[in-house]
Length: 157
View: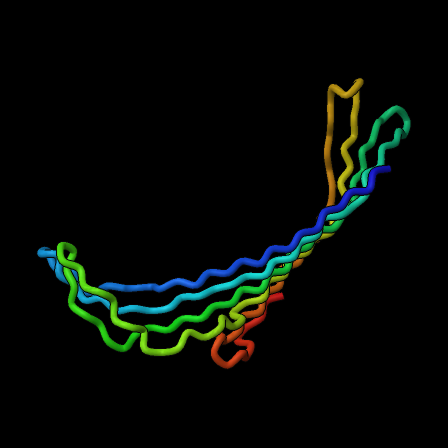
């Protein structure tokens, strides 16, 4: 019997200015506004199980049973300036200030992926023929939130 397992955790953040342009002309003129787009995500994962090796009536078996899980929280903050400035590809102008204070990112989604599995690989004719079969139960859950009010907007299970 072999016992295996792995666990992980990741936390990532991004804080960026997010300019956007509109009304591009063939002469390279356009209007540009500014914005903030900040995000973070927290992810936790687990993969664990057991592996068994045994023989039945001359057939070798490798039986694996295990679980996997991934949980992720996604958050963001977005704000845009109310004003824009005229600019040009050939003589660009500075971005306008966003005009609102940068705030912390708020939860927008919570994702859950879980599975349980049972897999058997059977070996015949001195390991010349391998047949694998198994069962897996997977569940997916997703909750979406309004990042401004923190209210849950939808849920899938």
